[in-house]
Structure formats: structure tokens, C-alpha cells
Length: 358
Image 1 (cartoon, rainbow, N blue to C red):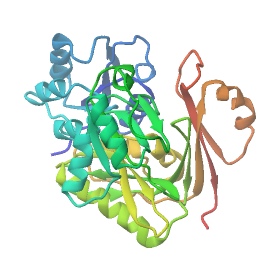
Image 2: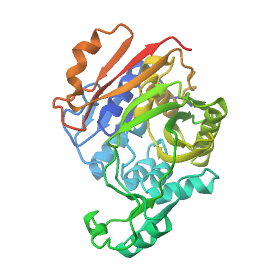
Image 3: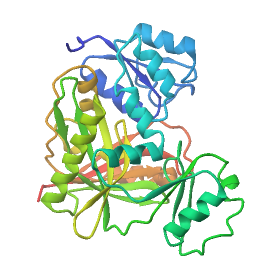
């Protein structure tokens, strides 16, 4: 049964993704309430109400559940216990199982491999001796990452063609937290698929985007991606398998490496709307944000069709100074996030340049 217009949707997290979800919800006639510890967050500027409290605050979670018809979230590091506690009294989408998988890089890769989706080779690492053994296995090269909480290139160290041994203190320098060493992948490009699954199991997948990262942060997403139709179909099929295996409801972002022969390796699952899907706001009939609201509200999924070729680019830090010039371009859609201070590495907004489909 779908939520009637006027119902309240709870959103955990008050950043730009929560902001765009709240805007999409309003267009469909819903009210939104945001749980976010930072006052005057980007989402609160457009939502109907904000609960200013920590994500694991018991009283705040109870209040959110009491006033919401359904609860969703804008980032994958929501405490699993919080999502599970909410789910006792109010529907929570995506399900807590998706958080459990996405919050731990080892669990994520084991999940993907378990349903037949290949990934880069990896080794769990808990101490310097295990790091030495893992680097030996990968011929002295790899990317060491924290298993939890890393994003936008944070919590990583790269090893290239290094002899094994002599890494005393590495794990301490990384915070003495569980780590994962991933082998290097000789990929030709990176793509992502934004897909959605409804409460009734219906599916919708957007065209794959070709992504470019700079300093570990997404710089741009281009449509169409420079891949063959078989590769595009394989990426969308993998997304469908992941959604079904998680009994998922909502929008998901899945990143892939594309190899020289067109084969795919899954890199990362994001159980939420995704930065590489911001282009859908300008170039599609139904954006990823509206699609997510449709899914969690029990509405029919919308048409993911694309009516423009496009390039979405993030405005990071002082990039926001480009805004006056960007506004003068005729075929460009701009979205600023309402953040008062530009800092290095901080996403201030994005824009999408559109052109006729080839």
C-alpha cells in the first residue's frame, strides 16, 4: 500500500543527499523530517522539520519513528542498531541488512562474490604481519583501506612495487582498526549504475555513467559511458542481482571497474542515492531522488529513461567561484547545496551540461 500525500517521510542524515531527497518528496506531496546533529544543515533548509540530535540518540530515534510513516537515510554509516531499532515500529528502507553489508568492505566483497559477482582480490588485515603476508600475495602492490567508515579517498594508503616486510607501525598509523588490502586492478574506466527496487520487487535501472575521480573524490560523470551494450547490460543485470539478494527497497549506487575485454569487477555498493547519479536530476524524466521516494513510499517506479547526453561535474571547495560563469551557459543545470563555507574537498554543489543524444 502506498503512502498517501501529506504523509511524513523521516530522513536520517542532513547533507546534500538528504536535501535533494526532501525536495523530491515535496514534489510528490510528502512532508519530511530530518535527523541530523548539525543545526541548519543542507537538508533542514528545505525539509519541514529537523530533529537536532546524534544518529544513535534513543529519544531522538523514538521521536523520528513516532512522526514518520517511513524512514530512510542518506548515507551508509547510519548505526545498524539504530536502523534495526526503528524498524520495530516503522518501516525502514533500505533494510538494515544493506547497511551491514556496505559498512564493512570485507563483508561487502564476500557478499558480492557469494552471489557470483567478481571483485578485486582482497585480504583482511588486522596487524603488520598480516599486511606483510598480503602484500607478498599481491607482489608488493595494493591499496590498504580501513574496512569501515572510509569515503572520498579517506582512510587509504597505496603500496606500489614494494618489497614485502619492513611495514612495522603501518596498522598503528592507520588507527589500529580492521583493514583490507585490495589488489590493483588494470581497468580501462570506472562506471556506476544507479538502480531502484520497489516494495513490490519491481526494478528500474538508469544508464551506466562513466566516472572520473580526482584525489579520491568523484569529479565527473558522463553519459553515455564509453562501453559496449553488452557491458552496460551486464552492469544493470548485476545491479538487479544485488537488489534481489538484499531484498532491497530504494535506490542503490554500484561502482564497477571495466576491464579491457569489457568484463566487470564490482568495486563498491552504496545503499542510497549516489553522487554519480546526480545527472538524473537534469537529464531524466524521473531523477534518482524521486525514484527513491517513489520506492520507499510504495509508489510505482518511474521511467529511468534519459533524454539528453550529459556531463555532471561536482563543485568542490573553491570551484563554487565558477558559479557566475556557469549560470551564463544555456544548456546547464546548476544545484548548490546551501553550505555557507567552501573548504578544500567539500562538495558545494554540482552542475550538469546537456546535449542532444547521439
